[in-house]
Length: 210
Image (tube, rainbow, N blue to C red; front, top):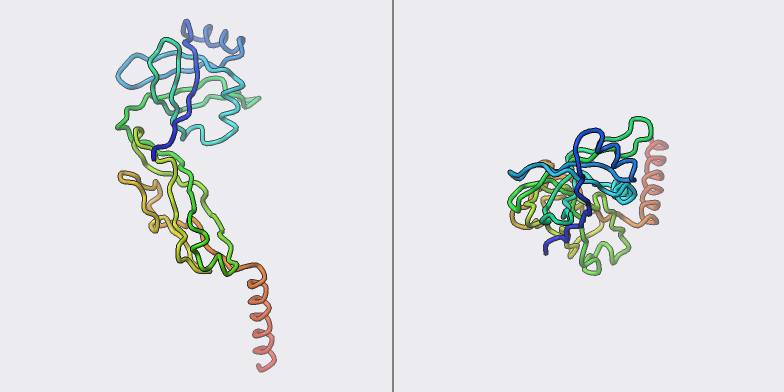
């Protein structure tokens, strides 16, 4: 199932250059530019508070947006640069690149864990420890998965789930080559404490024998 691409609303900026950009900021907007795709660059304005909210939510530079501008056909874009005020650290200009359906991009995709009840380790009191709730993937702009799914069926306490254990959708691959950990099923805290105490008793006994 393809991920729903969030909309990003903007307006066409009349005029170019520093004067038009300064006027946009005075009006409570952040100036930007949309380029690429074999057509002319499009100067735009984005509402300041809306943009700031998205920036603070994180992953702005790795999120694909459906750019909606009145009078212009919707287009998929990804942010390539956010310029900020050196003192206030607030956005002053944003650059977006147009993408085709066949363009490959790197995006963070959410990880879903299913069938916890089918994991013997969890039924015994083990705890699912999630190391990566999101994974950065190399995907086609026109076919972004809504999530990747990790099946916990049959997993025991101590089992570790790596990215190579996950069946990724066709054409999707992780951006990191190594077989990194996504999650593991760890022992219950009580069991861990008991094991630590046991280990301590054994160490003391060995010291006394020595």
